[in-house]
Image (cartoon, rainbow, N blue to C red):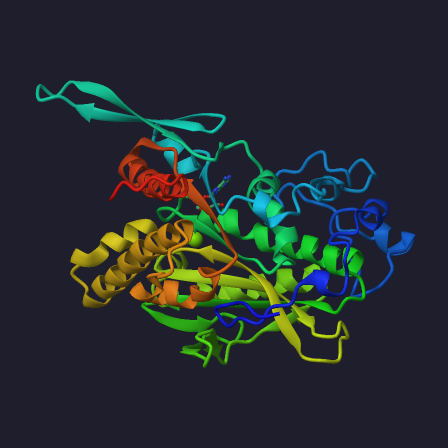
Length: 424
Ligand code: ADP
Ligand code: MG
């Protein structure tokens, strides 16, 4: 099967008329994390060895009453895969979610106030302002998003709200992207880190059970864009270059792609990539706040369903931990390097918004050439694509300005997805 943009894609339906074998999914009762190695039939033995969740594990967050803890299989994913929601048309093209983190110890010690009020999908920022006579008054800024996740929401719930609905449609030739946007320290990495692991768990479940023996394979790559250049986070930050092939497909020359068959390996790869990411000269947070980290999960399939033939791309899921949004304002910094990086970040965040705008309007022309980030994501902005933006915000009064900037950016992306043509 060929698409008009030249991308060669294979549909799972080509050899299997029933898209998702719901019956076999229902009867495969697997607890969390007990994904068997490739094509291995789950037995009571490997089911009981399933990894248990740890409250303190940042990958899995608060998960006190997991089905696993009650000795039952986890059925969240099983429940979510129904005949209704596997249809790509049922998954919103663009979803904008806000996540508020709790006040941290430093903010609490300073008696910093929580200025963010949340209720279902609404959010109010209470900004303290000064009158000319220097008396204080409060200005309220109200926002509505597809979902507002407050400080009590666990990483598990974030996954369910954002990425889980997309998983089945990755097998239906969809390229989906999940971004974390926000100022440094607002929780982007905390939010993004566990998502790919959960996605891998669910994708492997589909490959091993629903699409068993159909030649689907999962591949993993992890790289970063720093100062407009690409570095492989799984090959000691080897510098990479991007090319377009004859079909205008993005090709990152030299990028390591790992075939994955279990969740544990992916966890190690993510740890390795994140460690590589933070070994800059200026210290962990400094460095990573100026780079975009891109983790990609590609589902491929051998043309005839056999494992021995080279696999072709079916769908892709990209997770992007964006540079700190405040870094785009570093354009007046004294240091030339910082200034240039700031300009690049500013360019990429603006280009990203423009690309999402074009995506939503089904515009023929996608302005992906605006920045390295959008060039790299080019193939995710054409054809059958889905975007989830998670805007991370800090709750404290000291972050008010950055929080409002983040929410306004998210609001622009959201109103684009409602067909609002209002200009910036
Ligand atoms: P960013 O990547 O946006 O710079 P981080 O993800 O590094 O921010 O988060 C900053 C700090 O706040 C980290 O110590 C992180 O563990 C903590 N944190 C962020 N979000 C949450 C949350 N929702 N719940 C608890 N701690 C959080
Ligand atoms: Mg970070």
